[in-house]
Amino acid sequence: MRRGRRGAQLRPFCESARVRPRGYSRRLQRVVTDFGAESSFGRSAARVREHYGIDLPVSAARTHTLRHARAIAATGAPTAPPAAQLITQMDGSMVPIVEPGSGADGRKGKQLSWREARLCCAREQESAHAIYGATLGSVAVAAAMWVDSAQAAGLTAQSRVHGVGDGAPWILTQFQEQFGSRGTYLVDFYHVSEYLAAAAPAMAPAGKESEWRRRQQGRLLDNQVAGVLRRLRARLEPEDQEEAPVRAAWRYLSERREHLDYAGAREKELPIGSGEVESGHRHVVQARLKLSGCWWREQSAQAMLQLRVARANNLWNRYWSAAQNCPALLIAPCETPAVAVPGK
Image (cartoon, rainbow, N blue to C red):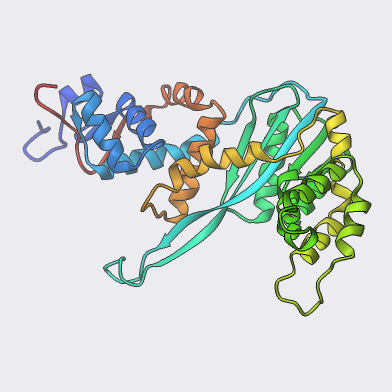
C-alpha cells in the first residue's frame, strides 16, 4: 500500500505484527547465535532446520552470530564479593587467521598465519568457577584484561594474588606490574618437569631416567632448588653444542629461581600447576576457533572469543535479558530471508 499514487509505502501488517521483510525475530537470533557459538556456521544452519523447521542460509547464521558476539562484549560480569586469596593464571595458544587477497577474488593472494590468543582466568581460592578473559590484542591489552578479570573475581587492595603459569617472560613481567607486592607468581610445575625429563637421558644411566627425574621433582617440591641446580651444573654441555637439554634445564630454573616456591604454595593449599587455564584454552577457545579446516578473519576471531568468554562467564542469559528491551534487536533484517520448511 502507498499513500497517494507514488507516496510512501505502508505495511499495516508489518507494523501491527512488528515484523520486517526478511527479518529475524529475537528468539530466532538467539537460537542461531546459540548454535553458532558452539559449531560451524554451516552446521548451525543445519541444526536450526533440524530442530525448528526453519531453513536459513549459512550467511545469516554467520551474520547474526558475529553481530551478537560483538555486542555481548559490553555485558559485564557482576563483581564477586571481596576475595582474601585470589588465584589467577594466564597463557597463550595459537588460532588460525586468514587475510584475503586484495583483488576481486579474495582467495587469490590470501595470507594464512597463526595469532596468539591470550587467555586468563581468576577465581577466589574456595570458588569452583573462574572468570575468564581472552584477546588477540597486544600484551598491554592482555594485561588490562587480566586485571579486569581479577577485579570481577573479587580483587581488592587487601587481596593476596597467587599466579601460576609457564615461565614466559611477558607473563611474568605483566603479573609483577599489575599485581605488585600483593602477588606471588609460581612457575607451572609441569613445565619445569618437562625440562627435567629432557635432561634426564644425559644425567642418568640408561633405564634410570624416570627415577632421576622423580628424584629431582621431589627436591623441587621441598624447595631444594640449589641441589637440583648443582647437579645440573656439574653436567653442563659445552657452550657450542647445539643440542644441550641439561644447559636448557639449568638456565630455565636459574632464571626463574624466585618463582619456584612449591612447598609454600602446597602448605597454603594453592595450585602449583596451570592446568586450569590450559584446559580453558580447550573448552573456551579451541573448541570453536580451531575446528578442522576453520580459518578466521581477525575481527571475526576476536568477536567469537568475546562470545565464548561471555558464555564461560555465565553472561548468556544476562545479555539476552538486556536485548529483550532493545527494539533494534527484536527484528533484525538480513539479506537473505529465513524460510519455514513445509511439514515442520
